[in-house]
Image (cartoon, rainbow, N blue to C red; front, side, top):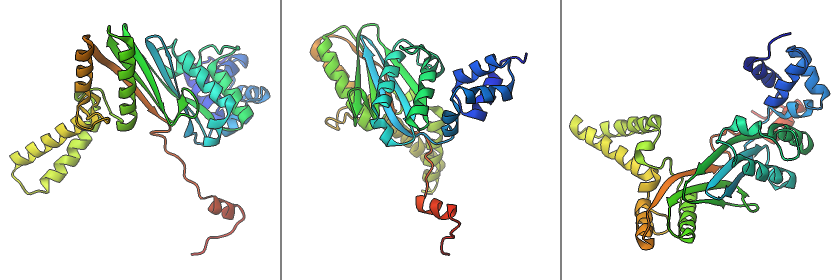
Amino acid sequence: MAEVTAATVKELRERTGAGMMDCKKALGETAGDMEAAIDWLRTKGLAAAAKKAGRTAAEGLVGVSVRGTRGAVVEVNSETDFVAKNEQFQDFVRTVAELALDGNGDVAALAAARWPEGGTVEEKLTANIATIGENQSLRRVGVVEVSEGAVVSYVHNAVTAGLGKIGVLVALEGNGDKAALEALGKQLAMHIAAANPLALRGEDLDPALVERERAIASEKASESGKPANIVEKMVDGAIAKFRKENALLSQLFVMDNKTKVEDVIAAEAKKTGSQITLAAYVRFQLGEGIEKKESDFAAEVAAAAGVREPA
């Protein structure tokens, strides 16, 4: 009997496009025989899902769910926007967001979580691929929590309650009026959806991203012909501006475009007579970072028919 390892599961998944848990089960059922495992997946009706696994899934939905002082946001992708309007797909995303509340933000753990009606999340997803007829994937999950205060969600371009194109969670620590915290959280979430901050604070920005900006600023400054010490100051100024404009707390609040977000929070804390801390936030925008495959339908049809395009 061949050993079932993470490497063999990965290989089977790459060869078939089937779900991770399905691949693991297939190898277990076939004593680790790779070819037999492929056949096992086919006999279980997973071949249809496997054939679709190579297609780019960059559409879909972002779903949010909040329970008490804990919130979760998930992104589930599909090939076309049409599927986002499918009630079966919407129910799946909604349920996954609720299940994510009991997790730690790990996608693999969420995929392996128990589905309410039996099986796992990944098994349910695989079944959906087969019945809906499009490749789908559970791409990512985020979870925030506070010990005391409020976690507020906001969905931009919502197609239905809790589901849309942009999902935001805001975690506010505080022991003041709950309604005031909720109202502030909603405004901050709307700001985050619009302004797309890259980090909570300037020092939290990705070092690689900062260095990239520094290289660009340095090249621009060096073209000015100014002395090296002046060029250095110009670069430092550009980086300081970049940090300020891309860190949430130092961004100008979109509601008035003149007050920094951290000052908005401080003003609300003073107004309510209680301490308020923006502990964390998560912003998921559907498909961000996914390279969509562009296709020319007319050219594809012509190619299939053996017709050459005019030179």
